[in-house]
Figure 1 (cartoon, rainbow, N blue to C red):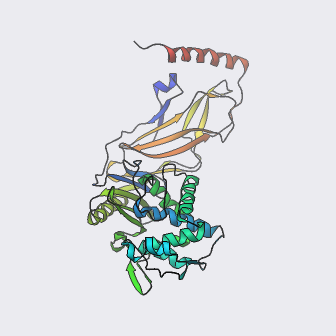
Figure 2 (spheres, rainbow, N blue to C red; figure 1 turned 90 degrees about the vertical axis):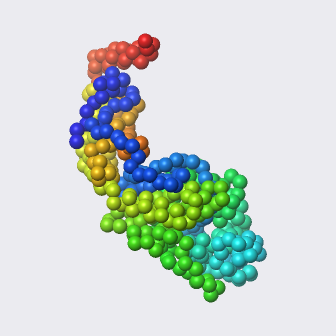
Figure 3 (tube, rainbow, N blue to C red; figure 1 turned 90 degrees about the horizontal axis):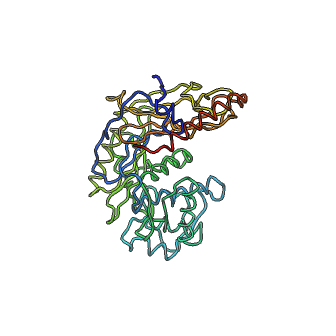
Length: 392
């Protein structure tokens, strides 16, 4: 696979610079979901995206963030699985059996181990379990919701806002399917010892056994997580993860019209993601990806490299139909130190920006001689005039 310089880039080195000689194609998959987003866990390749940044009510998918705060607190040593929390009247009334929502049937004024509460929330989607945890850790559910939003920002989730720990309808509480996938992948990577709860098929509390509400777990597709949700406003939603044949993918879908449609659309998308792509190495570790123009340097260009090999998932039936470009702000002004981030390799599959990889200077470039810098200055004056010249 060769990389060639764009004629446009030769004159205007500040914008689109290099193109790989491959063509894009339209979206490869159709879904009834109003919003959907799917990512390959190893490469970070975006395999599918549909209105992925639309703000939607999270419903019970908010419980993913509730659990992240809990898992983070345990990992930091502030709590253990054996710590106990009291069941308040607020938790019992708001999230218990009389509320009509998902519950683990916690008994009023009893105490429950944190591990049991975690299983109640993850497996049974227990609203009472969420409130018990929130009150026990932060004094009130409102305080805990603020922690959830703060933690979301720490993780790079810039749009998600949480108002309560349960996901019950509340004004201003929003997420995106893109950020839900990011959150799910983070939980899987960061807390493998707790991620296992998401594949647990059932849990018994207060002598009542409830099965996991995730329909994907009963399908033979390698699913082991994560959560379902429903609101009247946005419909049925799900965050799912599948691991099979050495690959793992995460997907989030929202806007389905029934639990049956949710299960079927999630299954089809995840199964398609595993069957229809294969890993392709674009550049080996240490391989030069491209060269960026240097202004006033001892050399006219600097080699660009990624940190490690660059791999991507490409459609099996359309291996040679994708688009890749390297973008940087230039020309780069000397001196350039090796290891400095210069640009980004952006790969698209169809209409979807699938992967972005930072590119770094593979060498140092010192200042050029006075003569070289004078020539570059004349060239920059000419290019600058061309940039500003009116088009006719």
